[in-house]
Image (cartoon, rainbow, N blue to C red; front, side, top):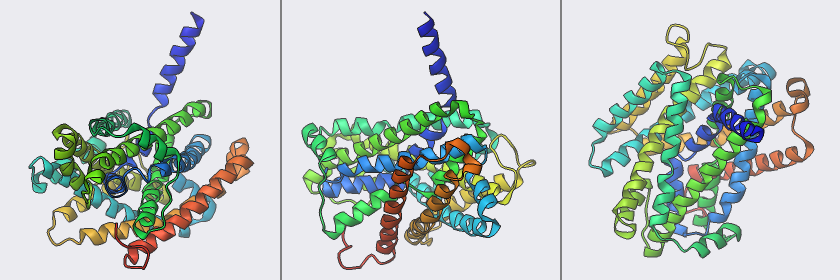
Length: 420
């Protein structure tokens, strides 16, 4: 009887801690991520599935560090960077982050519009409705309410495993490609490999996760459960990524269908895997896009206000945290307007945001590793030698691949890196 009570208490405690880790990791599968995984499956079948294991490890390592810093210090990442490295580097970091996240927000609203166009709804209706919905949610809601709604949005990502099942994949081939690397040296394969890694760890994720942990007021005694939340979120996120690749690999790849984005994938699935799979794919895209369109401006508002020493937080209002809410509002309005404006250079904006993310990531990861190993700051919770080895290796690999991603984005015609 005592054992049962202990179990129940643990479960309730975990449910109270659950949120920041799984929400942050889930947003990683945004419109751009879904497009990347869809193209990977459609153009290369199951060949890139093996990358999901090291990608998952890298995501867990990086997310665990910022969650630990948030719990131990009670301060956000932007706060710590300003305090330890000064105002000037913090300012330039924040400027780059705002520009990158504006481009990412535009991409999310574009994904939201594309998803609803599959159902015959014009973007001139879907985008304003979506923008008002995410604005109202954060501006008028409390942290507890917003987090619960975000957690429900995370559940909708399970539409992709169902779509993968409806595609009737070859289970043995999936298992084999998941554990046996299929390494190719052609340009399209290498470019897609870089793109998959580049969509996994974005700068905004680190700022948002640590801010969410701090706003939820999680304590050191609860950290073991926070770590479970982070790991669980990363695992679920990459199960969704695997499902997208499998769904497209089992249908589009074997039929020789080439696609350009996630909308193409959703529409092409209908005659190959059935209308239900197609609708689930489109519904997942709509959910992912709107989910990310609310999180990205929120993450930006958090890190800018914290970096500048301004009040921030969902539980506040325009009167007590004006900079926070006006920045959030401005990013949503600008992101939505750019998608609706016929002459807006959407492709250029998205490319720019990808490059900005790539340039920013090495600095963020380096700052994080210096902070997490500062004994004055972290005490006994600094990285172990083994964890540092994994973390620095992950950082170096991410930096190299991100630099390559920036190169192939800015110079798409380079020999050896053309043609997905």
